[in-house]
Length: 388
Image (cartoon, rainbow, N blue to C red; front, side, top):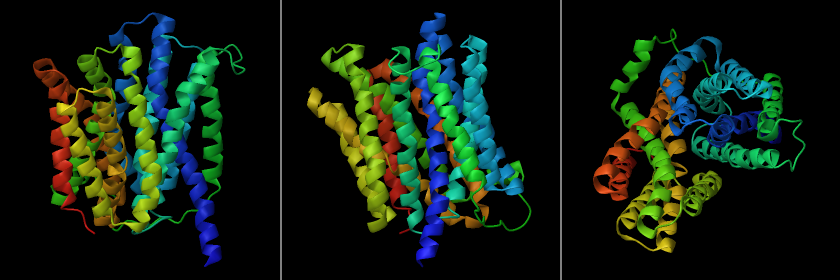
């Protein structure tokens, strides 16, 4: 029994290192701001960088699921790390617009490959009821990389750490070294993968899985989760500016507050989900978000608005892990294809902000909150479809 635990732990560590590498994609936020300043770009030119990430999820998620069925999940994760390594290598040679465009495109493609393949790879090490908590812990590890990126870039820009004349771009070789370590450690780790039954699915057969009602429910649930996530990041500061007249620099703390509680929720959720059923914890999380959305409609005090943002961060922290694990457990013989479909749902990160923009133009930021509330109401409906 002890040897089995040690064996699982030895496999889990390299996989969690890959989750850390998955968080590299979030450096696009801080990096695009520095590129904008360095090259004197307009907002529309600079905003192309972060938008690329969601675009590649739409294009590559399902094909990656098909690729996994042919070469295996571990090899697909290794491929994603190699693409990520290439994306981090390019900025070492400069930060011209075209070079950074290629770099961020590769970063988005690598992350789409990784998000699709890493989650089902973890399901070969951790099974059954513990899968949701382990996926949540993986999201916590990923969030650490997301947190560190702005600080490493800032320290490099202010010459607090040795930068070798790279300035803020020292962030890329630092993360590149971690990517190399992740490639080497995963490559030597033996992970026995469950074989899928029958021939690998075609693209059409993968999309046809959306015809299964529960898979479709999960797909829309992922879209709502990401929509609420991206929507809160963009809308929270605007609410403070609209209602309290705060400047952008002060209001930007709202985004940091959201990430703080989202990260804390991932960490605590990895333990809570070991003791509580996924359905119960999911329901509590959704109710927290629903209360917060109601609060954002009526409150005009800074403390109460902050409390609502914190509730959304904590409540939304475990939604992805529960929905993803439910989808994998529902169709374990098609986990590669299901994973591809679920990750394609991250495209919701572009759908929701568009709708929120139209609503906020018509009704102010309350309109944007109304769009997010529709997403929360859907998740409440989804709660009753979760298997215990």
